[in-house]
Amino acid sequence: MGDRTMTTTTTNLIEASGLTLRYGRKTALDDVSFTIPKGRVVGLLGHNGAGKTSLMKALVGLMPPGGGTVSVLGLDPVRQRGRLLEQLSYIPDVAVLPRWARVHELIELMSGLQPRFSAERARALLKRTSVGLNDKVKSLSKGMVVQAHLALIAAVDAQLMILDEPTLGLDVMSRKSFYEMLIDEWCDGERSVLISTHQVEEVESLLSDVLMLDEGKLVLNISLEDIDSRFVALSHDPAAADAVAGAHPLLRYRQAGGRGAAIFDGVPPEQVSQLGERIRPSLVDLFMALTRKPALQPTTPV
Amino acid sequence: MNSRFSTLLLREWMQHKRGWLVTLLAPPAIVLAMLPFGEVNGLPSGAPLAFGMAVVMATALSLLAMSSISTSFQLSGLARRDVQDRSIEFWLSLPASHSESIGATLAAHLLLVPAAILLGGYALGFVMAAGVAVKVGGLAALADMPWMQVLAATLPVMGRLLLGLPLALLWLAPLVMLLMNASVWLKRWGIPALVAVLIVACAIVPKVYGIHVFSDALREQVAGAGLALLGNGDGLEEAFRAIEHGDSSGVGRWVVGDAMNALRATASLQFFGGLVLAAAGFALLIVRRRRGA
Image (cartoon, rainbow over the protein chains, first blue to last red):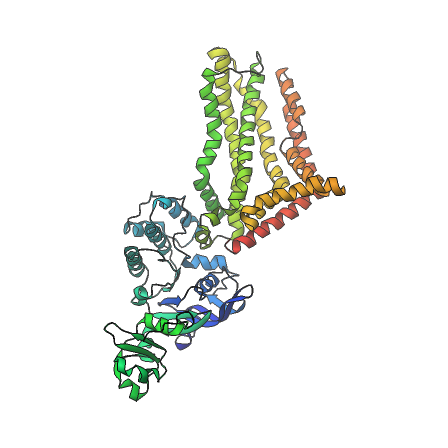
């Protein structure tokens, strides 16, 4: 992904170069460049206010770039928004389906508005859920609304799905159902998904790649396979904490059982490596390491 | 009409059909239900044709008036409804343009529904006329009613009103846009702010500074809308009276003359100035919707 892998425009579904987004004087996204090729499931991670939603809005033409360029499915999202939205599936937020509508009415409306929408497929997908065709959106729970929304947009024959924190505020069961449906009904190795979420642990197993934003800057753009080769986590005895800290890891934290751990960008010096054993860094720890604000979180672990 | 626009119109129907049907059906249903217990006054007696025409036209026009009043109250909310129920994000995620989306809402609420209510009210007018006739004169009065003559006299007037609706809407378009923009840009302060501005511009400024530009412009727009819908009401009354005396050509002449007057009135700076303002207002609504707000 990104600078690391595919560079041909034909295989990249999204290409952003030097993308900058501003709300008045505030910069929401600062000089961000990345590409997303076919068949990837990309997690967009970042704290609140990191620029995730702004980036997604820019990708679907709802926010014009303040600098740089962005192309989605080979189209300019702002100038060719109509054509673009015909070719991608997008869930902007949790529970935004119109509350007055019945599910079958939404299918009818989507059929008329979205040329690549299959009403038959939407009905088949809805059968997998507890949502009835005659149910009114306002009578559904938040989890059911999200299931219905996913069923609707998964019935669009698109190459790219963009999901902006689609499971925010949902309980574990609803989140699990959502991700199961996403994997079963959408991810086929050809189509790509860009999903922003705070539930890093839950999506880690789904993802092929990760984009991490921190205060509008892209701090990480990597595939999950490459995380293991680039980042090293070292589990060590508390007694070795000072020596490990001397090697300037990205993050130090305490593990269950009282052992310490540290994440390094690259292989730590040999004498430090010998102080502990190498473990796989989790995405959550990496996220913390790359986006942690010491000023906001003064109680540094370890 | 493209399929997206017609789907957006369908959305309006799905969302508002209950209110529209109540507006159309409830008043005649209430009147009919109350007929057995009430009295009927003020209708021409002993003149079934005049009686029929009066009831049919009164029903159609009353329902149109009620629907218009109801729409005018809804307009400010209509401008912000998708933002208020948070569904704007859903609509913006679909490939309908902003102009199509706003245009469909305006077309449905300001043109198609009033036209449908007018036609529905016209049809219900015959039911009302039958009910009132039975109430006043029993079943014999119903049998005496010259239904075809009532139809022949009132149908051209309906045609005139249907032509007048879009013209009246164009005259009122700048005011509609002003109201909707006040609501979407200033949110809950929009209507109070608009009322304050209108009071200052149309009441205080003319009195204090002697400047009547705003009040005159507003008055002319409203007068233009009235002329567009039904210009010469007295002429119509005369034409109806003439039918009772055997001259049925008067209604046709009135329709043509009144329609021509309405069309001629549009060839004015006032009308086109209003359209320019309305277009600017429409553009501002698009800007606001593009921002998802």
